[in-house]
Length: 490
Image 1: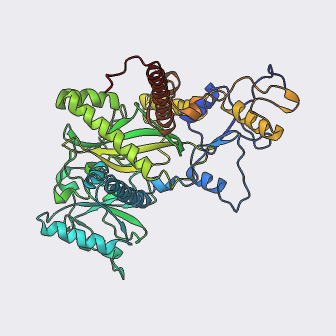
Image 2: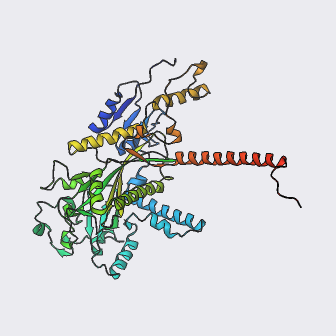
Image 3: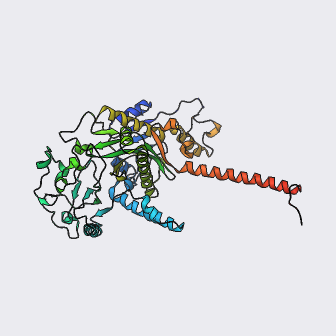
């Protein structure tokens, strides 16, 4: 093939049509893949169930080097709540071990990973949870609140709050019937009577009829940062293109999601989802949900507010702590996730900030909602996907993969075909392998972790230092051999 040959056409596929995704494909000039086509697809934006089937070894599907999907094979190591907790606990122990080996205080490892609320898996850890529940009560927190979530659900489904151990009896060995519906321990309590809410939603019901499938129970952050008296959390977008070495980007285009009803820690309000759960899928059912702004602030507006209310320095520390928490969470699964170069991921991190501006990791979503609630929401999410594709599938990536494949067939080097012909002129950019992505490519993304670039930088620094020492040694040797500059002899 001559060097003037046109680049190959990128064919995209998706199993759910979302404007923020498909519009980006079309804007890039990519062509939609058709099932009757003889050509393979190149980029598949798929749901997690489809990706699970793609990587199922029993189905006979094998991805080619010219194909790219938007999930890693076992992304659930980070996005399933119980596995995330398990991996974080293991990671903390590894950090403590490294600290001991270096003669450092192991407590520093605990402080570095102290962004995950105390969490137990149910029913597996019920005995440990019950022991901790009683310990907290003995310490004086008789009405401490815990939040319970199913491990495999999203959008706030199946979440409820408890302050009595008996409310989780069904997770105990031998099970048992759930307690009658209650609010803060008072049978028949209904927060609507005092708060005037029009509906409590599915999550407001106490867990009658809910099975004892795997759940996690976490200590509830009872002192959330409030704005206008309302609780909120942050949706932070993170793009990962490889895990070993780790390369991750964090978007500046996230948002804060607010509850409709002012926050209250009163026992009577434990069952009111409009007080406690920030999920849009929950809040949009409330009569006071604002369809104009979707109960959202951009991260930029939140930063402006906090700069004024708490000071720029405290705000900078808070956002830096969020970045550190996300980086540690990714490192906790770095060796557990299958590192496949044909995969990338756009994670939706949910972070809660307490009144001391301390961030807490709530959960990580493998499929953050791409539905737009407002025009500004649509523009934000379109930009997030655009920039994610810029780093995951940059210009020339398919040509580079094709050239690499052809070179392997030819037994030569990339870019040279059988008979010495040149392949496509464009190549995958060097930052894809060496790191250091230019800002012109990353757009709204900031580099969060780039181990390849760090390793390359350190290696070059060592080489410079070695060359400097070698030159210094040569000068010293020449200086001494001439007899000049020697000290007095005895």
